[in-house]
Length: 266
Image (cartoon, rainbow, N blue to C red):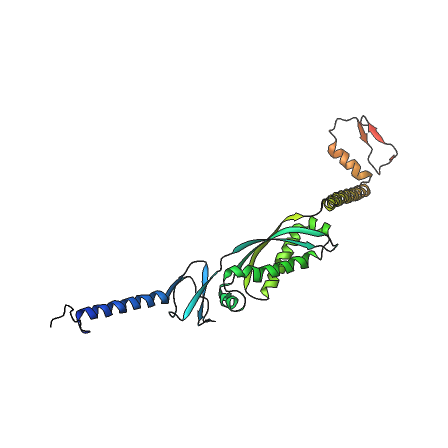
């Protein structure tokens, strides 16, 4: 009895084509799983069965073991984050301002950050930067009175930046690229007192400057007076004399020195 179905043997042409197609698909899948690209400005942390292996992978085409290794990108470009804060001064006054910190994850430390602190770069700021920044801000501002803070704002900003960098250097995770303090807010009554003190300091400095100038002028005239004897004055007169003036001082040290002038050549 003839059946309507045709037998296909494993060694037939159809079976070889199916096997080739399966192998090609498997090879393509393995290749796509083994290759990955790290964009510019990032590094990649590679884990093998959940454990960090090797150093940070740099931008470009990279290889990994398919289905066994996983890739976690970290942005190492400079990040800019503003942080609004409030803290106490040395004289227990409350100030508010904004600290804008510029930082970047160190490329070689991405694996250590992943292992110990954060699984991605979005967690770097709240877990690494922010605690150190707030600690440094409170530490610095607690050493100065409100008047000093308001009058030396730029100098204190540099001290805060240095303190934050030193705090983060203890962990070697990130580099601090800069820090700006802006938007200082204090109570209005204290602001008026600060302005009055600054005006008084400027007036005092101006008065001290005027006193120094007067002292220098007095010394100059005193020195000049000691150096001007009669002969020097006579010489100065002759240097300026036009030869026509009928009244000329008598030469000092001559006979008749009591005669004050020579009139008409006599």
